[in-house]
Image (cartoon, rainbow, N blue to C red):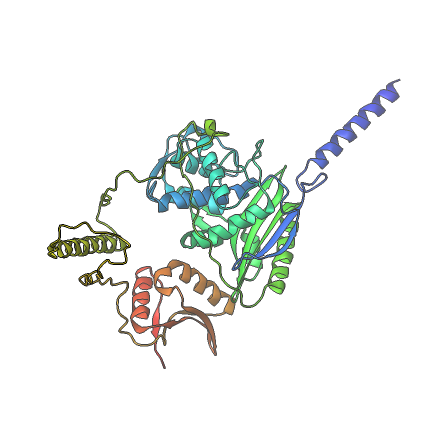
Amino acid sequence: MFYTFGRISRMFAFTLALVCVMLTPGMGVTAPYAAMVIDARSGEVLHSRNADTRLHPASLTKMMTLYVAFEAVRKGEISLDTRVKISRKAAAEPPSKIGLKSGQRIQFRYLIRAAAVKSANDAATAIGEAISGSEAAFARRMTRTAKALGMSKTTFKNAHGLTESGHMSTARDMTTMGRRLFYDYPQYYNLFSRITTDAGIRKVSNTNRRLLGNYRGADGIKTGYTRAAGFNLVASAERGNERIIATVFGGRSTATRNARVAELLDMGFRRAPTNAPVRKPALPNYVASLTDDDAELKGKTIRLHTAVKKSLRPVARKGGAKPDQEMLLALATTVEQAVAQAVDTSASVNVQTSQPILLATATSPKPRVRPTVAQPSVVTRISNSGGTRDYGINVGKFGTKYKAEQVLLRTALMEMNTLDGSLRKVIRRSNGFDANFLGLNQQTAALACRRLRARNVDCEIVGPS
């Protein structure tokens, strides 16, 4: 009897150990697999597998959290320098986190860095609460944004991506999300390629640093892991004129996931054409915020009364209008003056008749030619006095072509106003690789260098010779 009891005990212990092994991440039961590869320039699908299956996105969720944060900054809802007070809820989020304390204040820019690089859950929740007042309201805004971007099978329930009922997405939707981050907010895209960054209270390391360091051309975007989701990753890489985005759901470990993503990126570069049209998507148009009771609107029909009842001149923002606003206001004033002049001129024409004017009759006299009203001239850009576009700028010499290409990409995203439309060119020299932007006129090249030097970036003008 005692022998049988001991044997049963050993069998129970063995079974318990087996269950523990099966629940260990990367072993035993694995999450469902899905994958997607696109040409980022055109959005063309190069490979897909289970791409429309709704799965747990894990921390890929933070791509949307950051997208909405960038949108809120663009719309003036919050600034990067806003000091956000950390709530008890945000501080209590489980890892990964940066260790925010309840009641402390931290600049919004550091929360963005922590969520993008460290994938910090406490920072993600704090971002949502700072923008929408509560994480639940922010999650509803995230879902509305997803629908506006065409992510039709995505629903968010939180800002960080920890497993929650109904919090689901697909490989296709998350690939779309990665592409929209690159094209809609390029000024922030360099965040995703930083190996380390200052998150305000401490420096943090990138959760995607292994792929960034080992795959040529990789510059983002976001990792994710939960037991229900497996090891997820949306990755982007650029080589020459080609940019590929690859997504994997359900990887068995960090190493196998990264290896699979590298295979998919290689496949994308093989299949993508050397030259493809760049079709930049338009920014979404949707209602950014509803009331706190917007959940009650679900299932109701909302009628928008769009007829204009009264036209008011917009009030100028504090600090003065932007240059483009000043031009539009000046143009409106000029048009109003031209219309008033035309009305006065028409009224001054002496029409002496007591007979009614009959329209569309054979005997109607030929109408007089209206006085010519001079059309207002609108200056759309400063005249180019710099000659032809045979100037360029040099932003450094580097030991490898890959490093030069990386610097060119970061610089192009940093200074889009003057470098948009220029040609990024790496020129091999005997002592290294020159990183150049070509196809500029003299005036634009000089302006670009001044602006880059102000950001502590080395820059020299390259002349026609």
